[in-house]
Length: 194
Length: 163
Image 1 (cartoon, chains in turn green, orange):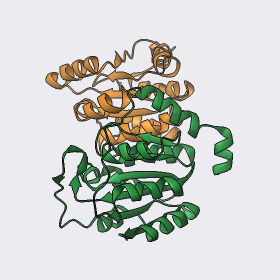
Image 2: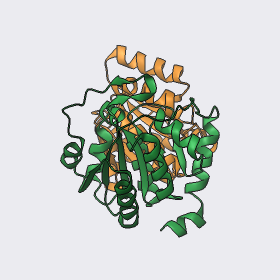
Image 3: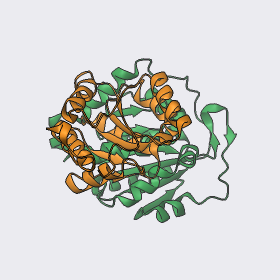
């Protein structure tokens, strides 16, 4: 699967639950595929997507999805270490692992010998998965979304290129934050997502 | 009454005022100056200790996006480490939160802290233990909870020292 296919599967499976997208191509692709009010696109900094997702999951007590990259995870693994200590946090932390910093031109990520799943287990995640198959990933994500009671880590090994996306970050970040707030604080949604 | 509070009780009084003003949840990183406040919050409402300042800002941002008014405790050295998180997340997305920054006695870091906050566009005030803490917290609450902007409270090194 490539990054676009993985993100399409995530958006489809997650439905109205909050999704925090790491800066760069993940945010740009998601915005291109379907710009929905449960999406929070980070414009920066690299490495904080899981931390923002932790805060959303803590406060809403609803399953929250983080779409991270291998580069952003390695830029700052403290979010992963924090999630690992919060054993009842309903967080699904997906790492799209393509081995390159796609958005800045494809520099290689210094992670060839790093085992991200082993890092997640060492950080305290009890449910850790790795997959390279799109169908398997989509089914895994749907089942974890239905049963999430503790932080889940899913590594998606990506292969193949993506269609070109333009840099589509909204200029009005304040309104983007307000849109996300309105969605996750909506009592109707909170009751339905309980 | 607050002006007569002994120095050792300032941290507990500030803790009570922050809670009364509906600030929370609380996130903290290690800071010698703020340790008494950290302990008071831990005993009252709980505080999540985070290993790195910019991650504390990130988690606080998530809770703020969900409608809370989080507080992040850090020492002044942490502000430098948070420049990216504040300038690329807190300020442009206008995410309200209160930073409580413990000052050290190292003059370069103190000078840098004020300069960084000013250049980041974060309103800041220095805690005065001799003045009513409720009034000082109320002023910060106006910025964070009514104007929906981030703000910082700077705590001098001896503010929470035992009298």
